[in-house]
Image 1 (tube, rainbow, N blue to C red):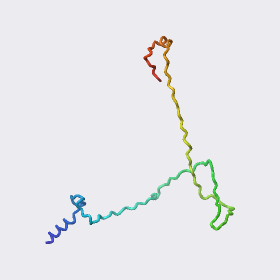
Image 2 (cartoon, one colour):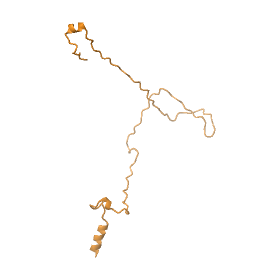
Image 3 (cartoon, one colour):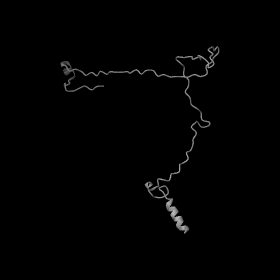
Image 4 (spheres, one colour):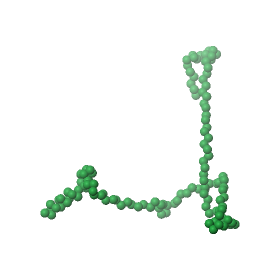
Length: 126
């Protein structure tokens, strides 16, 4: 009796993941167990040297001083810079257009007699 019960339980517990049955034969009522996601640290690893852009020599400098404090004070006799934000603007691209004028000799009477060329032969461009 227990052998028959084990055989029936094994038949019921078969699905496409543990047998050669197609996925369409799986029951729609049983949910597949969700896999646990591995949480990776999205920050740099310990001991990794960081990279940052080197500060360039400025062409313009804008000094921004505080206008008013949250308490209403507008007088700041002493202030010092605490952060420098660098903005790099690329210059406008100027197109360079070059025209190449290819010349060909014009046959005339002197040209035919001097180099013994026929008018059907074209010179080779170098």
